[in-house]
Length: 390
Image (cartoon, rainbow, N blue to C red; front, side, top):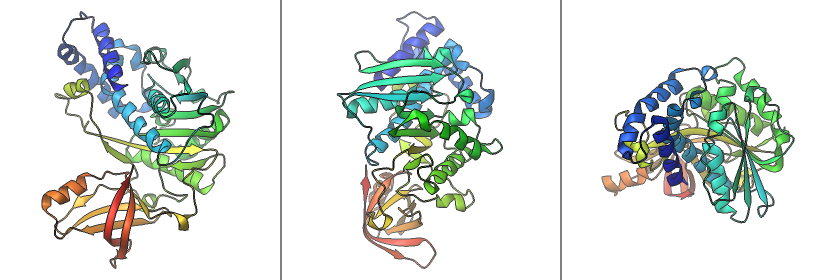
């Protein structure tokens, strides 16, 4: 789908720039680059509640589509596939119509990522995507591929006044929109977010999933983690936490006072157009950073008693190489943080680098072997191996 999306936005850029259809792609990208820089400054400097409707400007819309849309799509795609796969979250009636509500959708990169993953996993189902955003220009620019079983509906509305829907959906996604509705730095940000999210319960089917994606900034990530931990403490009122944690526990990083925070870091292959635009912008595009949380009215298929949980760890740091060991931090199924080192005696430097590079923040590992306490609290040495759970 990303190939179609890239060509869609290139055509939008040609139209916005009013250049002939035969204009070389590199010339189009050179001309649109200043608009990408303008948007990047807006996203990193302006307060979310002060954002103007930048998508009503056709040049900025095309710039967003070429540079930011693919990154949002890829982040959501990772979370959805992890949710449908490892966490075993599946809607009912997968041979019928599956419905998605994308709130604060913009041009719906997150909704389309979810629709695409569902279409691939359940090819017999029709997918109905409802995109809701305050920008009519953004809704009119959703790049829906042809020859697909995905049907699109749009609704122009301000989420700050959104009170739910009469129809219940299989999936609701809030992709980088919760922070625009309720900034994470606002007074009582956690409480206000909880009030808003609880309103969505009636819009979700009993086996449905509410997926929230946020920037990997400290403020946004910690607010989302507080929300996630709330539902872990109060399962069923009205949501259970489904992911990305391994169990119904609170995040130990919050208790440490914000030294680090729980987020994903994912390597990816960016579209060629995005790579070209970035040659003179020098933004960090090699990895995708984000935080996410999945909630549902019914528990996750992964929800088992903690003493029966296999020896699983979720990495909350990169794997780093020292002269004597590979080291990483992780959280287990009961919420215990573990700082783990793996001796590398007998391994070459290149072998160690390869092992370290194979792991990313957010990966889930199955431990085969013994974790021996090192004497320092929460520190262990692994005599054994790690297997990545995809």
